[in-house]
Image 1: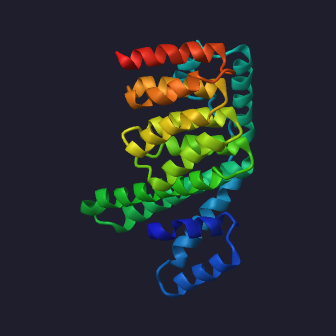
Image 2: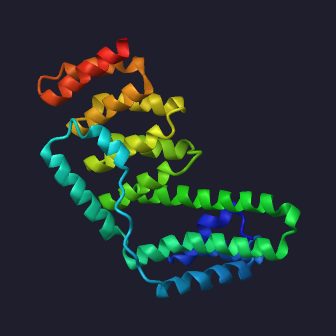
Length: 267
């Protein structure tokens, strides 16, 4: 079975995105016996077989519970944006990208097959833990890669992937905070707030959310952050919320929301 630390390299080879330098490194690892060429070929065979799979439409669920929380504050234009967002998600699932996602499943299934055939039953749980770790590592690599994509749909997909990572490391947290503060797409920033809330026990996340309040211009994002502070009962955010209230150009709906949020946090 391929070691976790080589998964990204093998994935790049199978996805035909490997650089010349990486290809040399891969060949060296194979020559040194650190990567079994038979494992790679098995994975390559299954990856190629994905081309014959039909492409199905994805479910149109986009964190309904989170957006329901914002409905009271959204204007009509936001509803249009949500509809456009769902259309963008459909467009993202092209055959090529579905095959790329299928690679992760191939790696998982190949690992299961090898575990069942060659691993003693008493080591099965340990084997499954290793496979889960590999899949989690692949999710992290994919999320970090897509967060830098030019397409807002791909960046949105990356944010959603990151929200499914139970133990996000510092790189994932930093990337999500950067997305929240700098992404030009409102929907991506809204999704990043939700993803960060999944890791709200991390003090770095809570501090980053508070600091982000002053950096937002979008009314939807401002309201979402106010709701996040209320959900977390983050009283240390009151000063930042007050500073936002001092803006003369602040949307009236946001001003009302911030006033109520501050009052609730002070109770």
